Image 1: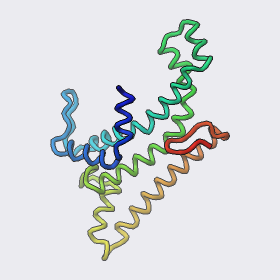
Image 2 (image 1 turned 180 degrees about the vertical axis):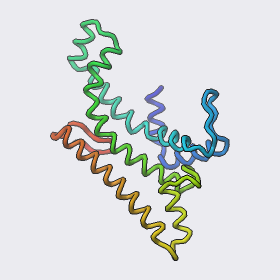
Image 3 (image 1 turned 45 degrees about the horizontal axis):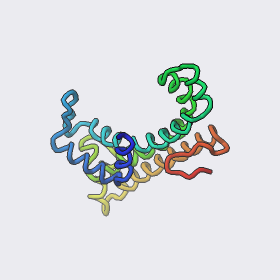
Image 4 (image 1 turned 60 degrees about the horizontal axis):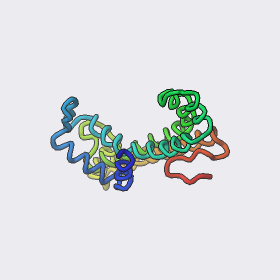
Length: 189
């Protein structure tokens, strides 16, 4: 069930899903019974981006975990009578930590870009809270008379996303110089 749910999220365009979730929850907020988030809360865009981003982490980690499950050291741990929790903690988790370290900066870069896009479109962080998306949107209103109000936040946003992606590549090269760990959305080398 979880795998099929992730497939549906994977097939849905990210920005459209974010806008739909943002507009739907911003109108009345989010009330799950034990958690109530108002429509103007900063937690709402964080929750929306978290739902959208879970696929980019869950899918590669699930694939790597499934391949590790069949490895001889996991079978040996099973043969020794270790429980599932201990096998996950002692055998599987240390082998996927490198993938998590590689995915970290890339997911942060995507998250920053999604937050800016959703805020620019009005489905993310709402005014008066600052966001690169709202800064760029406000700058568009006075683009002719003050272009720096749009260009500077856009350039800083692009530089940050680029630097985080480069950091992800550097981490991947440092951890795995032969290229056996694949970053999200990238081909194996």
